[in-house]
Image 1: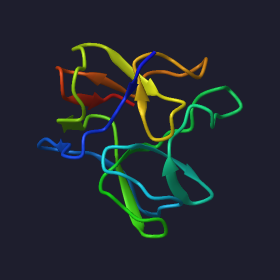
Image 2 (image 1 turned 180 degrees about the vertical axis):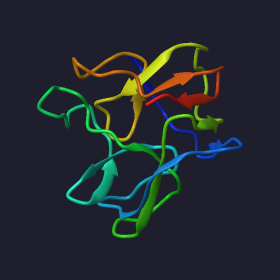
Image 3 (image 1 turned 60 degrees about the vertical axis):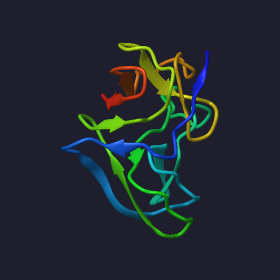
Image 4 (image 1 turned 120 degrees about the horizontal axis):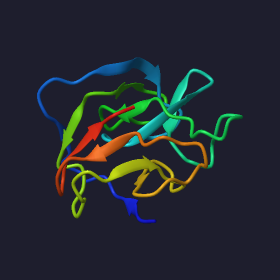
Length: 128
């Protein structure tokens, strides 16, 4: 399994779907980072934080760089993020990693479904 590092210059292409709007960030968030909701706050997602069904807690991908305590939003299913990373393989599904705020190219939590798929060597499509 390899973790996928979010590029500093990633950007949404065209139409985006915002699924979580203006919750306070419970920790610093980076644009493009997978996030989860806990106690009314957005936190970086982590496959070590799961539901009772062993599914990673997940709510979408952070819209912007946000400091802890500031309002944050998340993109959801159907959103394409350009220049997300490098070295991706088209068609490969991506899961929540056990490295905080990152994706992985293999399932970590046993019952997880992928949250995104690589559409070329740099871009992803959010599918969950």
